[in-house]
Length: 163
Picture 1: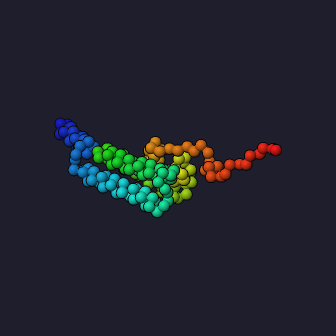
Picture 2: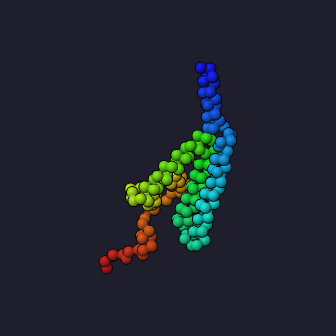
Picture 3: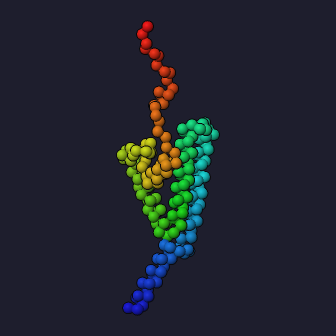
């Protein structure tokens, strides 16, 4: 009984090391999280600058402001996920979110159109990470138009006064 109890404590200590300490088992996961965050941030800002340089939006326009807010939100989310995954339990949580996102994306691409009709995603497939990024972007930058774009460009209606 004593040796069995000692073995159980040894297993618990090993689990504690994996989930909450600097064990060797998660050092490669930490490196991967940092490298993944750097690659994600580089791609995000690369797309932003490509869109800006190609004339997809002009500085100061609504499209530019929305694009920069989305790039910022994606950067924030990548850093947040990298920080969460620095612990063993965080790595498991991030992996779980990634698996759910893969399943949701596969279902969406297989034809489940309900995943494209989620409000606030503009027709993109619903994923947990995509929704989180969209929510961060909405907090950073949100616009409510007071009139329709066609009303802003059409000339004013002629006066209907009778003489």
